[in-house]
Image (cartoon, rainbow, N blue to C red; front, top):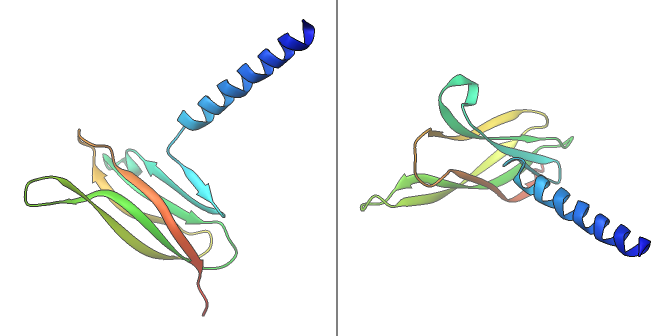
Amino acid sequence: MNRFLKTILSAGLLAIGAAIGHSAADEQEVHNIWWNLDSNYNDTHQTACVAENYNDYTVDAVFDLFPTSFDYYGNPMPSRTVVTMRPYVQYKLFGWANTTGPGPRCTLRSFSVRVP
């Protein structure tokens, strides 16, 4: 019985921890490249996609952004941007006005080491 309670308690804590980690923020990091959606960026009343390279070398990073423009019928359209990121410099990739509608998305698609 004691072993069963330990197992159930451990599984429950693990599930709670996974749920909290997933819903805590929009920021993410892959291979020391960090990005985040920053609402009210620098008190400008806009949401911005910001990114920083924590590697000791320059990388070329490709980000998917949504929405960045609208088609003829007013439907939101995605975009892709390539950024050469020097180490330890924060970049603002795109900014959205704080409006209602589909929330902005910013995702690292790929990256490569920049060879001089």
